[in-house]
Length: 335
Picture (cartoon, rainbow, N blue to C red):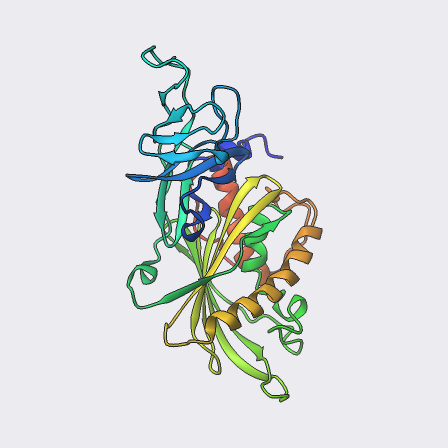
């Protein structure tokens, strides 16, 4: 690895990463993991709180605790922690000053787009992705179960952005094996990301025993560094919708992906169709991604052979390499 590349956790700690869907966080604390740290997430009176998972007293798991008015109460001895992680109550010693070391590491947290996002650094290096259509009130959303893959977040992103694998990996779902050539496409640099658009003759499933039909679909990829992408689907035969994939890094070789779609609320059958079809598509991707080596996201291009059709995942990788090195992300390289 290039000596100028920073450690994985250090490079990505200053960015926002999702750790839970909002609908998962109810009255009980929720366990989470991010960049090698074990976290506990809970709702306080002023919003969402995130701290280290284990009690400063004797290491009890705070996911087994209870949310009370003062904060999060440990189920082992009742030590209670406020939103900032400081202990505010030690029941065994009322009236005695609480030790200054009786505190948990606490982290920035915010809810947006139906997700709980966490930044492990004191100050975020970049804002959250801008997806205003999700806050307009005009679209409905449907989420898949969280995807736990034994692969790096960058590898997961690259397979989502890979336009050349569609006809090979996704045969039997939407891939068209007759479409092997990838026409030339452009990659545009956006503030904090990338954009590319292709046209793909997907195979729409046949209904009532009919043969699948070719459905010319416009695919628009919009990347928000480091690990988020919005993919807009505009078919001619099926529903127009958007897909959002955010890979949350557990470690350099494992990630959890938060994956959901937006659609017109009048499409009553869309959620069932989407969940069933997308889980099948992603399972095809998972089998390929988990078998790639190295499992960690490569920080150069020396160990692989690339062609022009790989431009989008290659430009994404160049951006991630820049982040690892602490450099600004440059625009796409000339073809």
